[in-house]
Length: 379
Picture 1 (cartoon, rainbow, N blue to C red):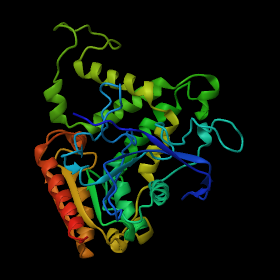
Picture 2: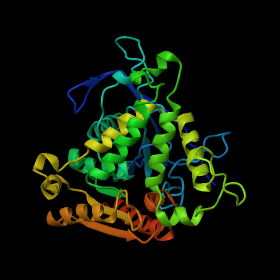
Picture 3: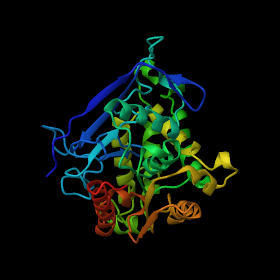
């Protein structure tokens, strides 16, 4: 049974400098908190979200059935990240479309909707914005920062940008940067959006339309990469949608997998913003902490002080175990305290959101040790 979650917002008037050299001011961050901050403010856990998620990490909204947070199976009273022990914070990233200031909001200087004029944001910018929100909450040091996929990149970046402000980093199904193949998938999805006739150079709001066709295709491409071949075959195989007779049509939906992908695309195009999709996938592309160190990840991670848990999944080909092991090896070169679990799970990249008992047990065990450290006054 989920608890009741309450969304909150926090406004920031002062400019936030961005990696691009631009800045943004008069922006709002949407966030939620679960559990109770202890007396010495040492039990806070920041949870960073992936591409199409938000600050609604756990719990449900009052009067809204089926409104559970995207990691509700992981976070809550008695769960792997126990909100009886920890004060958990979820923040919606700048540029998103779920409450924080993004392309569909108005520029404070012009009064016009940002649209394509919203500044490019990076993982590092999101971390800086999160740090400002924590300042306002009076939290100077986090017990842990946790995230999966793009959220894991943010957790990793926290250890480099604010090494003294966190004690543990939990990085799940993530990578130190994107491979060329991953960047290619993102670019194909972006091209689907920007070539939609309803995109209007990113200013489709002025025209009262939404580039739904592009969003549908972008989501279909993404969804294929989140699932493993085994899961697709098990769920759909080569099943036909209606009976066993082929229609011999190039236009009709015939296979169950086609029907499923179109359903996912339609659903996504109803709630996600096209400019947000462009911004977030570009932030994924840009993330590469080793770039300023000649590609040497160990040198990049030398400033990290946190203890680490990394988790990967064997069938995740989008963020493969090899990428997590790169981070592990770089941390070991720096003699950092790191635990690593490679979970044999059939679900592909989506495994980080699912209820694999071994995965949940690993995270529970790790956070139990973090909680014991808090009780004993140890890091």
